[in-house]
Amino acid sequence: MDLNTYHDVWVIGEQREGKTHPVTIELAGEGRKLADKLGKKLIVVLAGDNIESNVNELLHYGVDKVYYLKHELLKHFSTEGLTKAIADLILERKPEIVLVGATSLGRDIAPRIAGRVGTGLTADCTSLEIDTTDNKILQTRPAFGGNLMATIICPKNRPQMSTVRPGVMEKAKYTEEVRGEVEEIVPTLTSDSIRTKLLEIIPLEKNGVDLTEAQIIVSGGRGLKSAKGFELLQKLADKLGGEVAASRAAVDSGWIDHSRQVGQTGTTVRPTIYIACGISGAIQHLAGMSESKYIIAINKDAEAPIFKTCDYGIVGDLYEVIPNMLEWLDRK
Ligand code: FAD
Image (cartoon, rainbow, N blue to C red; front, side, top):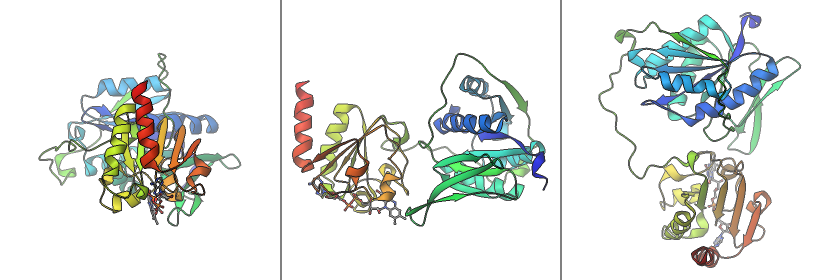
């Protein structure tokens, strides 16, 4: 493999039923930084059918080019269709770096694409840097149950591929200026290339939640002592216009659905305000929320590790502190 023939930074964008997933814009932000450091182009690949407005909108986020993989067989998500279309394009155009969102869809296709094109993949990266001595990408991710951070390189193969969870990277800024151009590409796909048939799309159940979009999160841990504690947290979240989330201990206790778990094996969030109530601050929990802008911790143990991470700490019983907060908010 001649590594010198590979160039450009690609982001594999994601759209679901015509809605661009926010992780695409987050990766465009990160991809821009990497491309600028390498002096290369940033290209977003978006696949679908009749998604011209999504494709054109991407040009407002500082990308140099969008490859629009247009095909009726890519109208809905298709593991086999997307894997083939993207892998074929990688083999033809040879990007140096490929970033994929670690969403359920991204996690499905990224390892398949890496396998097809014969390269490695670092999953769930939390930071990406360029080693300027040899322009390799340093891919950092939690390892050994989150107890240490491992930095991984892909020295002999190209492209260097990483998945990054939603909410980890900062979104690219929207600008009125259109920087690049769209290239429409029709992949070679026939219905024979896709062995599975989509019969029905079942929307997320009503109580399903996208924590990555929440600006205020009120999160509860084992310190709540029971599922009932979440009713109190919900009151605070409703008052603040936020969402309720939880630590794994609370989820494992059966007090709340796993879709609300924050952390290494849950969702990574980056809200403006994260209120941790009765959460000790284990490293696996911090992995999912430490990038929040302001962290407020309520814990009755002054020695709890969460107090080392938070911006504001309240030492006290959450069952006294939160009713007081609600009362104060009522008076506002
Ligand atoms: P605890 O650690 O038991 O803390 C409860 C806290 O509540 C204590 O600090 C206590 O002082 C306080 N408290 C008690 N009563 C009150 C009260 N009345 N008022 C105020 N404070 C009170 N964890 C996650 O959260 N997310 C993950 O994604 C995750 N993934 C993991 C992956 C792996 C591979 C492993 C090994 C672990 C993972 N964990 C995860 C588990 C993690 O290690 C911790 O066990 C978990 O985060 C602890 O949850 P907690 O803080 O709610 O409970």
